[in-house]
Amino acid sequence: MLYKISTDVVARSPHSVRGYLLLMRLDRPTGYILYLLPGLWAAVLASGRRPDVLAVVVLAVAAVLVRGAACAVNDVIDKDIDARVARTVSRPVASGAISVGNALLFAAAQGVVALLVLSVANVETALVAAASYPLIVAYPFMKRLFVWPTAFLALVMSMYVLIGWTAATGSFDYPPEAYVLYASGAFWTLIHDAVYSHQDKEYDRKIGVRSSALFFGTATKAWLTVFMLLSVGGVLWAGSRTSLGWALHLLAVVAGGFLSWLLVRVDLDDPKSCWNTFVANTYFGWLILAAVLAGQFA
Image 1: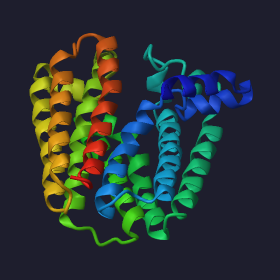
Image 2: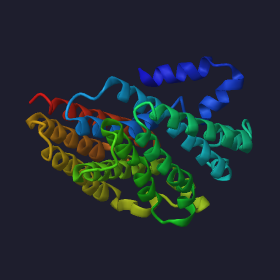
Image 3: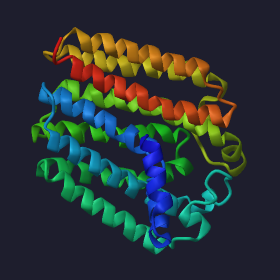
Image 4: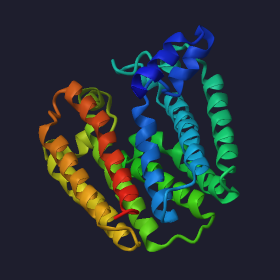
């Protein structure tokens, strides 16, 4: 449903606007959901109750803007690479539909508006988000400098855990469970991005771009199983540090079983299977959110 709404909005938008909506990946909502959900886990866990509706709305809107800004920056830095890969050759900057200057201005505007939106929750939340911006800008360069760039991406995306925690508490004083939940989000990112990277591994090999697919090779599934255990284990440990009940643990285990099933069935040599599994990872995130919410009542 969300995917259809997003694609319809982009398709029906004026031509002068459509390129910018594509630049921020509004037609690909999976990325927004994967970025947002760990922040919502944290907001619920930190509050110890159902989070404030305003905080949820603020986190959701800001997630779209921050991720949109990140995509614009990424496309500027990767424009020459994108132009050589079939899946990305039509991206607005790579195709020349949007200039580098306009893309950077658009990224900056989204970043600033996101901070203003987050400040509605509290100023501390906006400051944490602002601290993540240098990491967002640095990530595209990791594909050129670091043999395992997804490890850096995991650190970047999981910052939304701390943003969500701060939105709920208004404090920089994070307890151990906040950092463990941050690690859980990071391990989940290692999983879904590794699956995603297998779509382009042949292009990456030819071009010389580094990725998880090339780094793990035939051992990918074994490593992702380890990351799954660490991610779910972190959620269980963080939940045990709170007053949330048994339902959190039950649903978190169910989520782990679902993610295990995804990893067993994905064909890492089939781009379509990789894409479908990448999208299906959002269900794991929703299950963890449901676990945290259910834990308040049982």
